[in-house]
Image (cartoon, rainbow, N blue to C red; front, side):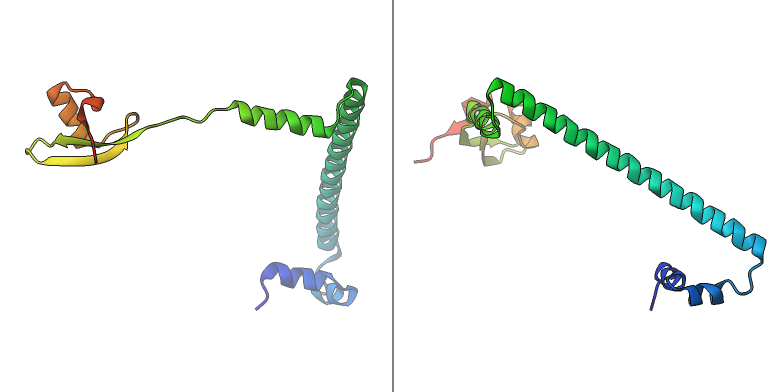
Length: 143
């Protein structure tokens, strides 16, 4: 089953089909439709010209940058090298993870594996608040 847009494109794709489509339409109505279609066509042409202008401006900017790079003795591989050097300069966070042991308000002993930073399970945070202990005080050695 064709949708309405496919059907419309099909009908407008041939002079014969256009004639049959508009056979019962008055001339002034056809002229209004054609005028609207021409306005839409003009809008499309303006959009295309604007995109082409942007593309040309971008190309011009690229050429200007290339000239500046050449005058400084730089190449694209130099930029890639700088990018790689920037990646090496970043250090990763070293987060240590441990087994923690704490007691819930009901007296149950719970073991939790996690880091020394970040959010805690609610029961664990409640335990620390109740006892005044620090997170590091609850680390248990697993041997």
